[in-house]
Length: 296
Image (cartoon, rainbow, N blue to C red; front, side):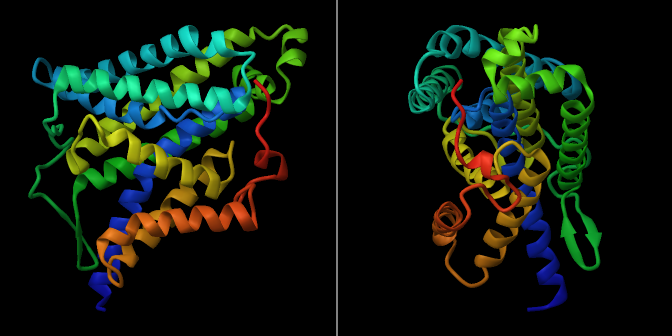
């Protein structure tokens, strides 16, 4: 295998891994605020791409993306207010089942609105045939957008949860909801904000990857599974670890194609998940507390 081929596999793995990281970051935001897993996260990515595509035919690309993020954030807020908040006394397993049901509803709604056609946003810069030459390997300029936006989101979330009162309040809600209330934290608002952030970041991810991966009403399920694998691999609650785990999984999948048929790519991901769950349930970078979900 030539150096150019190795670099091509590396860039392909980084691209795919960044997409997984977008979904895993959404998982971590909601987990940090509620201690539950939201399996509708993949649908937020799908909605972002679909809504942005619809508006891109009516206005420039940037306003279309902004509107898609805002609308999807509003959808996340409604989901928390209508479904999650009313199910608060349900067990963690019950909450997970609820989020799976929500993902199915969102997928069917997308099928009704946008039908089965595959859609794609136009490239943020350049075109489909544009490419950047890096040491002999060629990548799309859209890949640089994906990496840049992922880096900005991770840095922003780190600063938000580490140094802002709102971010610390969201983490307090995850640790102990009753204690957070006694401290004067408006827990309902914090949990709702976590769903809005998660949905908005997922939508932004859906917009930025749409030119490369295209967008389909049923794409959310696969992304939800891969994002969950990445979240577990990195350790629940850690956005930086989610990016590292996403890139790792993307690289493993990319190089596996050179050895095994592409059909085995998903099998490799599942095997990695099973190994992590058996050997280190808290994830590679996670703490022991992350291996057991908290009551919401």
